[in-house]
Length: 95
Image (cartoon, rainbow, N blue to C red; front, side, top):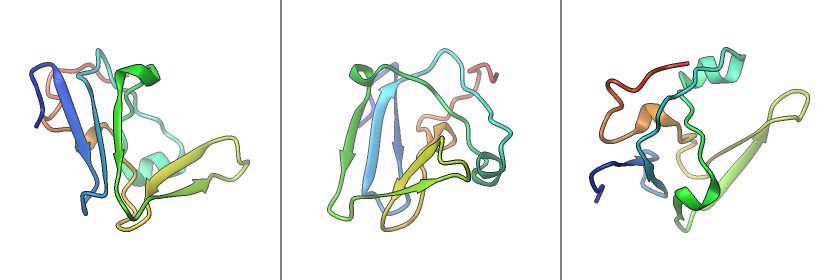
């Protein structure tokens, strides 16, 4: 359950779940993979976020030059990003 001032992100199958504070802003990246994910990214210090990983675990994918790594659900393939936030991030500025 999400508490006030918090958001929850879940993949489609429920294997991955992140709980974090509602961000001050989110970022749109214009690289090919982020455009395909239609991703909005929120950035946090590790201590601000709770991550729960189910039995299926995670899968890693490295983009082209291998300078960036995407972590996604090993079962349903969803990469958790702020577009999946509950509650929705209406009113949060987009950079």
